[in-house]
Length: 508
Image (cartoon, rainbow, N blue to C red):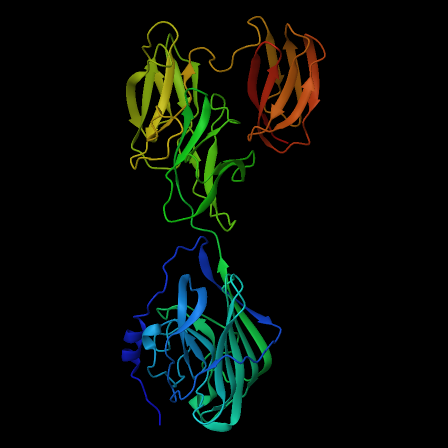
């Protein structure tokens, strides 16, 4: 009576599943959620599978819409009279397995299949299988009903249930009106769940897999596809734009992903905590200038994420850190260079450049990647400029924002033997902020030529956290910053003529 199909032959044939459509999913599919839902069985008067031999798949049936199953699009299915819907249309009109002995996932069970549930049914002389597509796009539903079909081995026990595939949302709903246990056949086993095309991943209604024996009445379950964060895409360079004196962040655009926008994160004053500092449209440059950065004063760490077209933010990349270079006087006429270590990629050495102007720098020497200090013992006379550079051996090919910038290297700020990039308000003005570090109270001592000067304090993200007008052209003013979190802050004094700035450390 039964056509027993050899397991290995079945598995090989089933692996030949034909995909109707390989359209790209704009979201990152990660699996299915299985929920209990309100029971809702609605009889349909659609087409009927007539004269279908026991344990057999139907011919190919069009859905009438595109349905995404395990992240692959399909437009056709076949139905088994053992309670299955499969997207493996190579099985059309072939025998359908009845021996339920192995739990899913397994290559020993029907592949690329909805088990709705899988029961050995016998509808040769009783019961009906109806199917129909209802509604209109984008909300069509394909419904298969198994109505009063005897269970093989227990012909007086009949199964009634329904499987619904919903367009657009791609959910699978299974409604069981009556399902009893036929304990004297297949050990009373039945499976309610779904399995992918390779038999490696399955999602099952709780307690409804082999070897469980279970019954159900007026029961509803739904399998909902889940989208999650894409894996991170790496940054390739964080550097300093010599034209704007601001940090520039660059990355290679990925392919095969529908990206809405890129999100650039910067480390806050709390170590290890990152917050967005910029958003870049997915169609724009794959480089970003952080206008709130001060590379002449401090280094910064950055991470990158992106928002896909489903609105989900990807995982964050590993951090990259800019190089901050400082100069100090050494013995005699020498200059001592100190810099922060570059982070984000491996490189063998730092290159040190020197010149009489920021545009005439030439290579002075190279030092190992573990060296963070260098003394220029014999510098030329006059003003001198220095720059530190680390080269990414993997290169970087972003869509260019700055055409003449070398995106394969991480460059430090350009530091000179006098304060460049931090001009004084006037040469005879004096500003002093103390104590530094402080515990929540600072004194601003100043002598300026303008009575309209403003003191501002900014966090590492460039956001103003304190602003105060100076009451005269000379004096001392105590400012309470204790409500702020511990960290590094940038101070700035401005008037109508120029700017003075620096940094302080708050430790409470």
